[in-house]
Image (cartoon, rainbow, N blue to C red; front, side, top):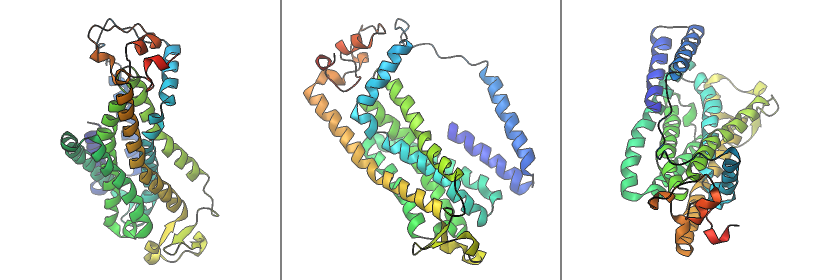
Length: 327
């Protein structure tokens, strides 16, 4: 629904900008009014009832200990590679590719491009669900890793980003990467972290999808004429002041966008090795200590008292250690 809503929003933005020639200021006011309306509607929303009313909610201190146990697990870092790479890719797309788009097809078509990206996410998410049932989460994660590599590689080694509407390829690739994150990425995380710790894992995953972008935006803020240079196909640096005319614009790439593309490419290459290591760790743990891979939901009648040590004694899936190994 999130991506469908984005499709509708971007379609409305396109109609306002392209067909009705509405200026940016009224559009900003319309979007602000829509956000305020959404906040007003949230007042009437309520949290869903707990799945098991007899379970107590962990205290703040118990939640902190649960978070520390999660980050002690090596899989927490291994499975963080994909969301971090996706975060960096989204920031690179927004800051780098969007600035190129304004110089080619024009900023008035940004709504069309973003709508097609959201549409590609919606379509591929459905295809990913069907594929997961047949080949599993790991194989679909391979498609996401390929998207993370293909996007920056096409930017670095071709001029497609500067060939007018061919830039849609990059936004479609980003949409595919997001679809994999929303399907196989979440499913893989749930396979590795079940039970009470799954909430910590998903919260950390959400934070990771913004952390890389935060760093990229921070670097863009400090961009100066000295580091905001242009890089041609041969990798030579050309100052902005000496950039050639617009008709040769496609032969150069902003230096910051090139540097960020290399970072995304390297992170994309690391995704599948990290996923495979996490899977091997889980398989080894399941073999050495089967009770450590059980969810408390597998034990009928087991009640959660809010004490993480108590849940470990019943095989709660927390830190990848056998209950006897925890002190």
